[in-house]
Image (cartoon, rainbow, N blue to C red; front, side):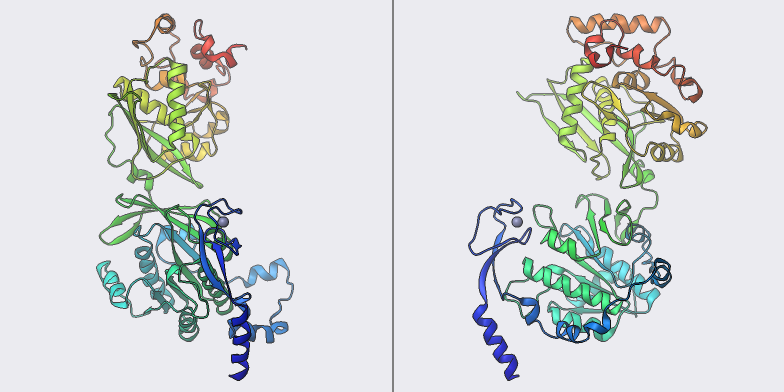
Length: 544
Ligand SMILES: [Zn+2]
């Protein structure tokens, strides 16, 4: 005891105050307004830290040092390791297992982040009860709620378990000892921001505490083969508290996203040492908690009104999972000097680019219109393949012409009005076919690779936005109150139609016949884009 006291005294002399950036961990002797490392503003908080806190925490690290040579790992062959890998444990919440990469790996540390109130605890209590049922033991440690509150929550969700133990605890030492003593097959720590090591002077939730807790739990998980889930709240900037520091420590980072008042939640992996980060889980918030949505496209489209103007179904890919979403657009006369642009669920700047392309390349005036664009269902889609859907929804809304309800689209729009290829075209087309869409309007580039799908869905390859509009909204480009230049084009459009070259009707029926694509490889494009009088709009493509 005396020796320990002396050591503590020695440390006390060295303890100093420093200011630590709560975002990246940069520390400085003085408070600073802007972090020189990560550039964050007002991110510094005062922390009293012993120079080497790890050494002063005793216990585990001292014991570890003593037995160090005994626990040094021996090199093994790849096949030896493969045979010795512990099997994954399924939580029984299918979408959760999917995002984890096919279940939980024993001994892994999983961080689940998200806004407060989004449903992290709800999701975890459900997974915990199911896991405890299948594994025989589990421990749920909450610093946010009392055990009574947790059990009430479980009761509300219809969950009962004799195998899940609950404790309300914020002391890191106590949490570690609970996990060591009860030897559960997994543990949940809700939340990392409430956990504090008594030996550290910093307040709970500061970077020093969060990092210490995560490091200790990581070691505990590895040493005991216990899977540990930690809940982390996201701060107002949308970062997990101590984001980079924490993300480095844990094995897996899952983010729960969604609109707090919306019906759906998206769980995605942003880091996964045991699986891909391409998986995406979709949940529906119901009275009985978070229900896995196995068929999200169907659900996202369930309330869709077919034949409504301004509505287009887009085949998007989130992570590696194809997802059909409905894009809605409304164009209304504006009473403001600068018209409104309101965007929900899509990237604001991309919508503005698409609107500019519509104005300039298709000569449609939007300058006196308020434009509202919404991706239905509370999903946020930021991939460029949404462009074509946004454009068609806006034009459909502007002209009050519905897009055929059996059609679905995807493609990126370039500034010259061209439609560019996007990744995972095959997955998108298959998903469209699976949900009963009969035709898919998509970038022509790479279309041949999809020829094996021609019996499932009619694929209409296009090269320009203009061609896409002609295919799905025939006649939409014809009458606009625009200037003389546009009137001149009207003639061209009509001329082409009478000549039977209009791709809207003419080619759609047989456009899907992929065998014909090679012959007509550029026909569609030149019909639409480089017709006389339009060449100036499509300058880059005018020369053959
Ligand atoms: Zn910083």
